Image: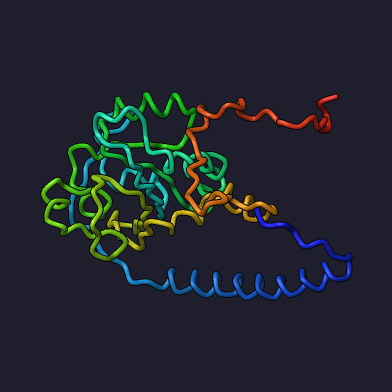
Amino acid sequence: MTTPTIVSRDEWLAARLSLLEEEKRLIQMRDAVAETRQALPWVRIEKDYRFEGPNGAVGLADLFGGRSQLIVQHFMFGPGWREGCVGCSFLADHIDGTLVHLANRGVAYVAVARAPYAEIDRFRKRMGWRFPWVSSHDSDFNFDFQVSFTPDQIASGTVRYNFEQSDTSMEDLPGMSTFYRDGDGTVYHTNSVFGRGGEEFVLTDRLLDLTPLGRRLYDENGMSVEWVRHHDRYDQPAGMPEIGVVLAGER
């Protein structure tokens, strides 16, 4: 951590007002990018993708739950893995509270992973998540949406991830895709985001960015710090404040 500059309140206010102008420009740019994103053309889904869920086999259109829009989290969790990806789990920790709000805007949210459903369900119950989750274990879905790759693809260097060729050695990578279903049941792919694009949906990162120390992605030697854990693997029990603050109603 660099030594902070200590100034008067007036000097702080001048610096804060300068930052405010940058924040306004960022918000305006985000709004403009969102409009461009929503104007993207759509691609009709021709394949009959099948998934395994808690009640058996379902199709892509079934994942909408009667709604017109669908967000799919491409969750890194391959067959035989002991647990899902830490980063994907970090994002997933922020989802349950949004489900009712999304539903009231006609949007469904579903996680999809390649692990068999029984393996997924064990991990989902351990983490206490409520959002729907299905397995694409016997489907081309993950491969077609370029978040899973065969050993031959990896060996040949023909993997495409985040819309460009990648030299990854990973069989699964994270992403999110959105879909629209029209009145006759036809499904369209409207957008996908990969890599750091998923950070936009992680509230913890946004909150940490407000703090003076930030996310602390690097230590004093410039080395990357991998601080995120599955929420049941932190030393401090979930939901227990570390400092002795008495909240209203807890006296």
